[in-house]
Amino acid sequence: MRCVKALQLTLAVVKPDAVAHPLVLEALHQKILKNFIIVRKKDLMWRTEDSERFYAEHAGRFFYQRLVEFMASGPMRAYILAREDAITHWRGMMGPTKVFRARFTSPDTLRGQYGLTDTRNTTHGSDSVDSAKREISFFFPEFNADEWMSREEPRLRLRQ
Ligand code: GDP
Ligand code: MG
Image (cartoon, rainbow, N blue to C red; front, top):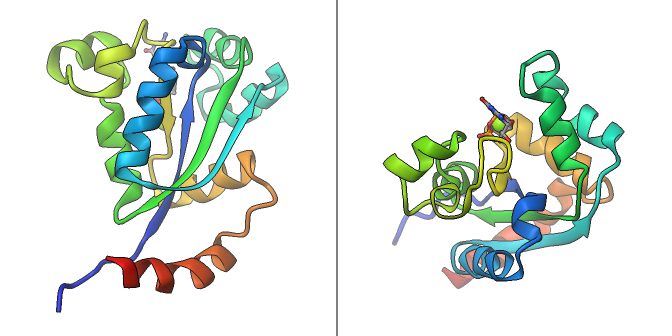
């Protein structure tokens, strides 16, 4: 019998620079569909206060002001995604944070293909189990991860 690892959830966000380009948004959506189970999807726009709260860990960094203004500058799309090793897989698909590194060392990643600048770098992804938990509740406060897992995971495992 094949050993199946447990499903994991992560939060993925398509940032305003990518949502502003319908073809880029659609390309990202197709890649997500191919690689993950889409658990929830939401289009939304932040106020600057939401942006500041979400990125509080970066307060004081030289790019913070630019980042919080950019993230509240237009619509975004947030997803809860599931698969084995979802956090690492999505981070791998995104590529490096800095756009020049992404372009030159990882041109096949989302940031390598579509990133515009270090700030406008297409996507966000949780970087640990704890941050995925926190960020999923930030974007989807009504979502109950434990309940979803206990209901869906046994069913989805049977399909593999
Ligand atoms: P991520 O987890 O790969 O998104 O990177 P971080 O958590 O370190 O940073 C959060 C976001 O801040 C990044 O996605 C960028 O949008 C922005 N950022 C990070 N580092 C820099 C930087 O050196 N310059 C600028 N302009 N923006 C940055
Ligand atoms: Mg980060």
